[in-house]
Length: 365
Ligand code: ZN
Image 1 (spheres, rainbow, N blue to C red):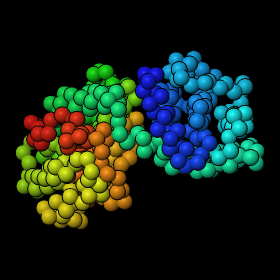
Image 2: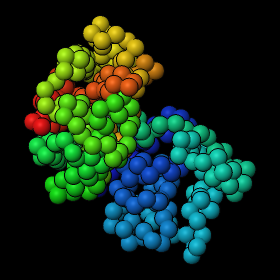
Image 3: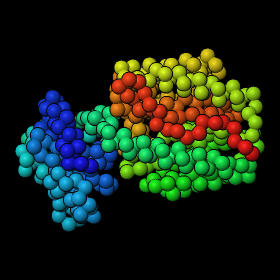
């Protein structure tokens, strides 16, 4: 991360802390640590104050931290001391009184240990989603990485799409897809690739099984690659050979719902309103009982599931720079399912779809 971009991320956080009358924030969520400091390893804490920007890290990462988190003061614990034991001492030495911690990223036992270690002069205050809120709107640099992740996973799918045929197992197809991500330059898959054929397609989060693909199967693929830390997330549904009337009806219903939701995605609309558009569409075409029970979509970024959620409980207004999935599905227990998912960048004037993987449904058997 560029030095200027890092300071650009600390300043709004410091303003937010001032509004909340917090003297410092202890950051323990790994993706938040990465976002603010640039450090890509798995374990480090940050202490952010009006002037302070400290990174606490264990010795496995010291060299990496000096390189990646250049603007941060590296605090080294004594040999074999853990990071948490370092926090009270850091807070005492910089004289912090009201210190926020990330309630979603600190276990109850860690919190108890922390509380026992600090002096009475320091009050620990739970905070929720301060950094996550900043992460919703991506910078140009982040969007460039997400375009790369979306492009690699789209090209990988187009490649393996041609190899789908009866006799391959779900697991084979998942393996081929993961392999293509790597060949095309991804760091890794962003999550466990889903290949769900036949009646397995009725389970939105199916794990790939030994089931052999058969002629006439409808298959749901849900996959994504991670590139330079950033995730992509795509779903496609194909049918091996000719579509049955029922398959056509279900897939067209999903396509229609997705198109209607996409049309609605622009700055100013609230997340829950977009979800309602898709849900209403499926209720009219297929009936509400088989409509998706999961959110219509979610933010994507350093993590595969970020804010906002396109769901009834989320009133966040969409804004330029957000990257959100649009993934309606229809699931019929005992029969199968269909889901189509694209990543959508919210722009000043509306939206842009980042995922170009083939949307064609039939594959030649
Ligand atoms: Zn998704």
